[in-house]
Image (tube, rainbow, N blue to C red):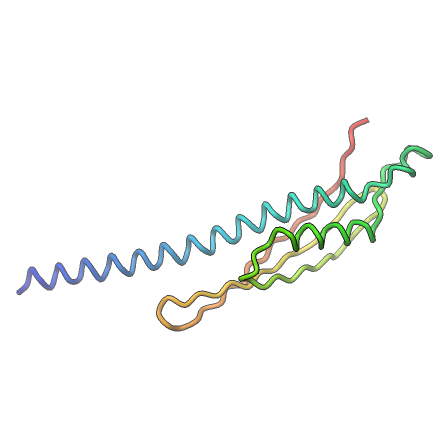
Length: 133
């Protein structure tokens, strides 16, 4: 009888361990995916918003604010998953020199034990556009 209780305890601990691994893996993958998506989207939107006419006329490196926001929102919306809630906050856009600071918040919910747990993941990024001469 004692050995069967130990066997049952080992099986229960294994199931609990697998549940925790699944939970932390989903949270970690979400955070990592959001960071890389944010980084690549910001870089692409800054390159799309580069003001080429100002660069040719005066040699000044600058971006267009409205064009950056439009391109960033479009690119980000095309690449995200629909199962999560995203909140984008753009704090600072400098046109000259080109600098952007933004935050993307994600709400992820999971229900392993029948009780729904919600995790808020926040990614911050400040980017400066560098263009080689």
